[in-house]
Image (tube, rainbow, N blue to C red; front, side, top):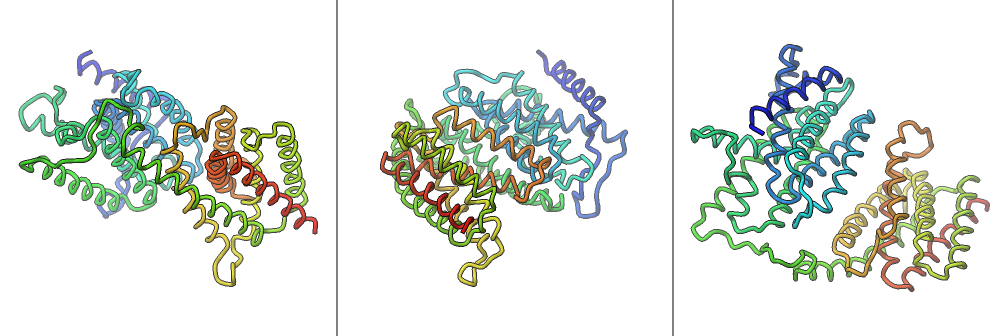
Length: 458
């Protein structure tokens, strides 16, 4: 299909969505520090078309390596989900969560070496959806998300598209004729091979997504200035590296083997094995903190803890296997109880100096990267999320987070579930090691539930 026909289809799709959904880019925020820029409707319509069509083609043009467009889209969708979760509107969050799950499932087979390919249909549709999700996230009444935030989240493909097309036009060529001036081609020219080029661009996208999440309520001019400064420094550094006479000898070469078979991955596995001991200590401290400084269980919480103990004990007796995956579900429930008790006493002081809530957050902040490192660099025989039941627990947790604005509870449900998931994964990491480790974890958590019950009824 010719570029003209593609553009015609993209513009038509934008017009239909704007007409049916009423989505327009009319408030651009305070881009230059002189006040908010609000576009009249006659200007908002063509500007929205320009912005969304630009997004469509940005995702399409960055789809030059296996898994690249899909991974960048996953990062953007996750960022949109988190920001709308914080904002509490729900519409963008639900759409982002649905598409995020679909793209993650696809990405498993699209990553290098790809077994299936996204193609123009997939990348154009992905850019179209991301474009209007960005409009919806920033233009809904009462939204606190700056219009510059999606530009940061999708800054890598957007800047790459602007850079490439500008260079083609300045050289007198067509902006639609393919060449080797894209960002991923620059890394390939440096000697970085396929999969590592993709990982580097993932890292860049993740960096800007984190910056956008942290600064999503800041003025647009601050975000714009940060983005332009950071991008300029990056491109100047990349240009400098490309012009070095002997080029830079980078240690991230590729091979025909899987990334998991590389020497670097083996070293990281050894390092991840050592972190398990630290993780075990952090979990023990968290459980101890909940038992010592946590609130006293209510009757309902005590009954819930009794149910966890009873069901867990029955499963241990029937299966004689502390590594049973159904038993681990009760570990998750036990973790929910402990964290709920901790949340009740978050303002109390530990040793008369340290707020319990801050100590709890510190422990989780230390646990989370250790859990992620171990799951990413796991050994082949280690199966942390190996059954549909494990994924069912995580899916149900995510569903509760999504519907949490409609539920009135004494707890901050998203925070409670988020911390419980981290604790659950940490317990899985520790329990997977050996049968003895699994038995220690189960015994400790069931004993903690018994302590909660005795303290609650005492």
